[in-house]
Length: 243
Image (cartoon, rainbow, N blue to C red; front, top):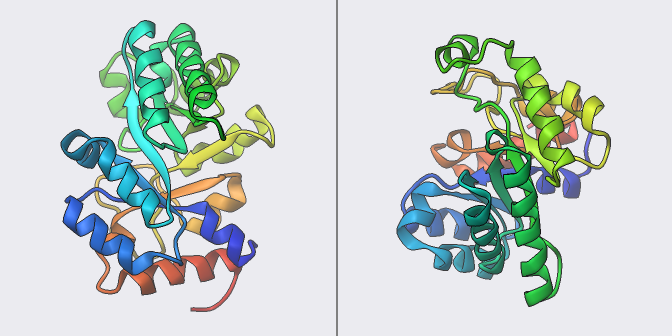
């Protein structure tokens, strides 16, 4: 079980909504939650200012842009994303070792320019919305778990600080990548919650027990009648407490 501080640091709230809704939610959760995820929905519309607004409210930011392009472009993109204040940045492992290595160099260059901590780079393995049939449909014949392992080894070997994977692969990834790797797991659903479009899911406590470092949780919190109550219930679960 986690301490309260550890539990709060483990949960990343996915802000897949409008800017106004995101700011309203963050104002409610300020001082309780510590991390938010800014994805394409917000960043492509509002740009770096949305990251600034989250940081001004005291949140750390997982900038989930899933970078995937030629290595030269990725170095520049990682540099820019780091300079805008991202604490964690996502990149697609499918882009290959050279692309990931250039992304790492971009984050290192940004850290030298701004001072302070380097933005952590985590690689997307297989999206949690994909199951075996979906993987086969794009020409990948390996089992999901084997494909995730291959991509994880490649990414971390090329300079990524960790990976994004489903909770089902978290235990294997922790064993494969060691204790220092950042393992971020989307597809987190508290017991009884609607699974939505996620295929490979887990409860918060089971994901942490399996080896996850951080849990990305969106709709179970953001669509709850009382988001603060929903967030607190997840924290209590991670602490082993009754709600």
